[in-house]
Image (cartoon, rainbow, N blue to C red; front, side):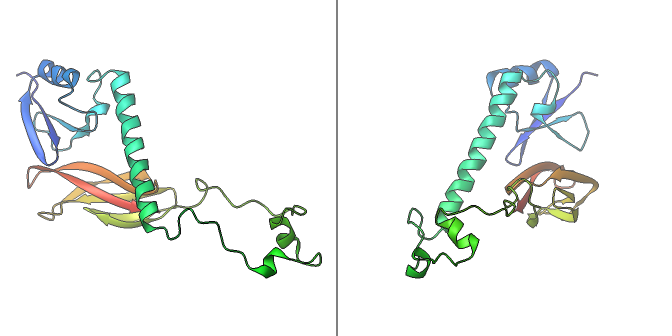
Length: 193
């Protein structure tokens, strides 16, 4: 029996296709590297970009760049919507502008005076990150760098028995999985800061 392949996008599953047909769909751009792919009756799908020899390295790289730029654009738009007074210079009081020489070194350093030996604040990548909300998942643990969770269908409540571990990135992370009970592609949304 020949292998039968399926792919899913936006909750819709299409197939079956032969491996030759699947490769043609990927070449023509019908299947994207971010779509989920299933083989025969296997319930767990995998991202199409991870299927060997389905896409060229250029297609996978360009899809990764597009998803990164799209997520960055969304974060920038969200930041500009929630920020107050964007583009305005910070307000300083007259007392700060005329700080005497007996003022602490931190105040003089902010005016362009002598520098202090205080350690710089940790960069954003060094700070521990935290998951603040999950839709379609049950958070099992998080350590500031990685989150461990189980997937759960939001429509029927079916729990996935496997555990998934992934690095915590700021913003919204999306993970797809196939619910065997609903027979639909579901999306897990994990928000972190």
